[in-house]
Length: 161
Figure 1 (cartoon, one colour):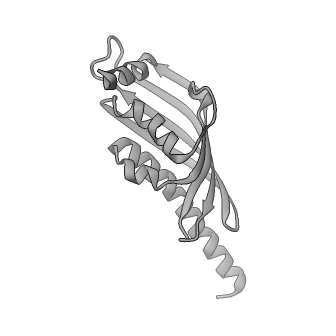
Figure 2: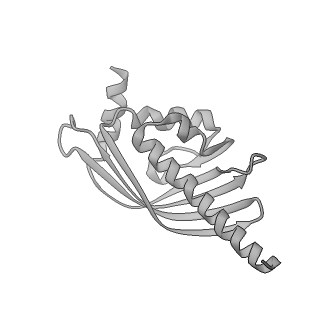
């Protein structure tokens, strides 16, 4: 292969590896595999979920893991679907923008048991010394939602009982 072909093949491999991080992220949340979820992030992760009701950008993987599990564990089911992955790769750093649709379900909800969010993730990724891609920073931009948002609060309360 020529150098140009090698570079194109490497770009395709990087794009697939980068998308796999987001697929593992979604799978980890939906299967409650917290070890797998943590492996998707760098230690110095920044998570910006202000469009979803977060008050500030959360800094640090461990802090974010506590925040995300404090709601997700209280739900009966979730399903995170991503699509339309658009990659920008520059050496060992990359940006991935991907559409999202996330269903949240709480069977014991006082009314509608579902809350669905649509929007997109913007993920800044880095390739580590181990050659694995991880999210260094990611943000959720909510563009629509439907259903009973209160189930998120009910799920958190369910865990504190």
